[in-house]
Image 1 (cartoon, rainbow, N blue to C red):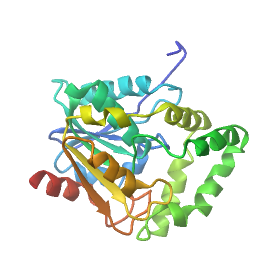
Image 2: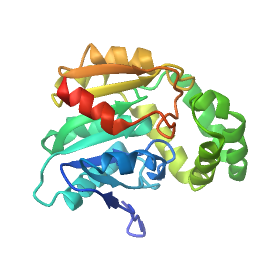
Image 3: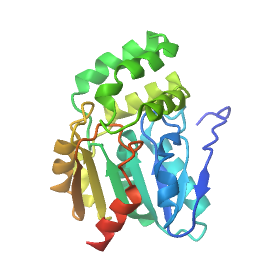
Image 4: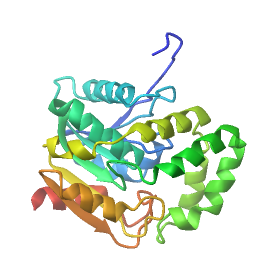
Length: 251
């Protein structure tokens, strides 16, 4: 870590109860949990935070997540780690490296290894020269393939506004991390109870297929398909993660 790295995780905490940390996806801001945080805060002490844009190694992000957990759980009570997309890869990696801080995992539209790797080989050099301000237009044009059919237009507009805060540096670093990320042969070592949520109409990641793959290898995993939902599903009006967690824990 550089001495000039001025990383501020911008931790936001709501509610009281067992600690639960929401780990953001590629946007890295933590702000796309805005619909879910008030719901989860009825039962949990919910923390959202931003990923370190300068992090070029998963180890740095793991250490940052440990710091977030310790800041909201001073007695080192283990937390529920809820990771969406890229955040799911960090949650899996964290469970392997710091299992004592993990009460349970909730993995949403994620994977143990990104395929096809060739796609990253094209995207990374393209984004290095692509006009970054045009990314908002790209997200707008791909909205029908990324979002759930239930998501309202005003929610998509809010999504575009929030993701405009994503930096080129952070996005590229997270893509580079995905090129090296592969925990397929270590999934059996993750002993925390794990809920795998997969959007039925995810056109970015084969979420259902990946959830099935992980469920067969994680010792204490449960998988659930989210019918009619796309990759960006947490801002849809009919997704309530609090209810989903209640049903899972009661089963």
